[in-house]
Image (cartoon, rainbow, N blue to C red; front, side, top):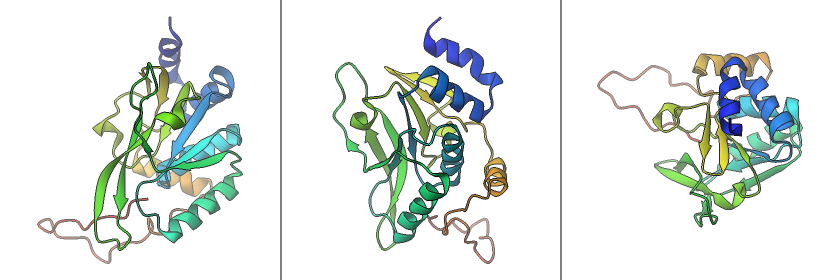
Length: 206
């Protein structure tokens, strides 16, 4: 049985935090990296990771303009969780490492005036090169759109989505139970819902 098959065989019986602990502490010590954004599910994963090992490398992915309140929110989350190994990438790492394939996160990016947005790929080949296990936790899109397995293999990497089956309500409940703040733009609400025939306005992505 390969390492991948072994992890997949036990993962259904593990909670998200138990799976992360198994990977970070027991299976890939010093060889696990987390990619994150400022979405609530990402913050949930970061809380779990911080409770396991605050020195675990965390790479914040972003594309395009980043609003000042997003920078302030990230600093607040990092300080609150006590994360000790933080970096950032704009995802321009398109050169594929020899013997590997392209690794990327899928993200939305907004213009500085907030009037338009685009769907972009955040390439992570150089960032992920030193690691064997990748905790993928950007969560800009529904995971069912491109990821079907909680634990998967992506050429030389074990790629893990710890919250693949979590609902929005479960994420919100965890945030509230743990006293984690939501992104300031994420808690804003429209005064009334749009009519069925009315297209939804672009939502804020971070």
